[in-house]
Image 1 (cartoon, rainbow, N blue to C red):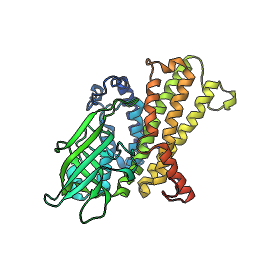
Image 2: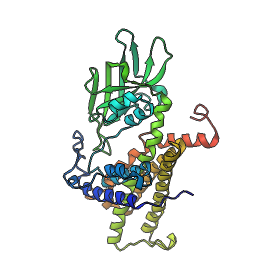
Image 3: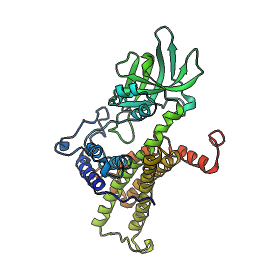
Image 4: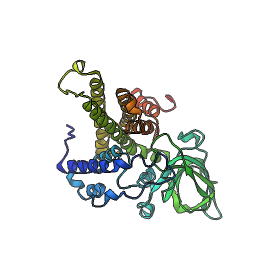
Length: 380
């Protein structure tokens, strides 16, 4: 039997993370018109507050497991709108852990490594990658040329792990990954991208022009190993969606309560006020998504990342965030669209969860292939 009952340490960590999220909430709009600014390492309120992730590392044996609780801590970060204390761990770090050698991991494990997959033509479709890594037999270096777009942590990272098409005189053409450190000649970061939502998140384009990196920087992550990182991260993105959805639901319940509308969790929906009935239906959907996220991380702890389970969590999370934030605005009407409250921002922020790290359509394709027994070529 699977039990998702929290340990006492789980509860302490999550409650502390929620408390800190509420402290951070007042800064959530600071980047609405200041997208060129980067998040501070920590807000003043972080002084004296314990680092919940450090506590998780220290007391992990008293928890339900690092994978599960770490995902739920991200839920709380997004509940507050911005993290009270910055933590930059990117997908590039995950690929390094999966595919890097011990020497490569030792060198870069404590750096923030962005991941460079998406390109101007073809988006994140691996078959359309045009960035190249050409092996130079004279210098024994790899020469990288190409562009990447919509890269998270582009400006603030220490290095980027680039997916490129290998051009080697003695090897067949294939996709592989390379670490390009900041300051490498030919590596340039574009301006911050103006976005509909998550305006606080560091997002920019990257370009590589005859960018020479040593052979040591070739992290031999083939496409399969690179995409494996998404099986770890997609449930975490769904946890982000849970955090935004929870914030929207909590705010809307407070506004309804001020108007005299209270839910009755023991009564049939048909007997409830229409607004309460609509939110109660979404509460059930929120609970189902939460269970899907926790189950995906539970499986990952026991067996390794589950491709289909992570896609299920990601698809549900992206859909939930859109449905909840839209419904909350519908319920509150014009008040929901006012910048005096959080809903219109939460609505804009929620859109990303159904897009990055594989759109909802891609997740449904992965799930359908699994159910129907089709290959990517047969169902695309």
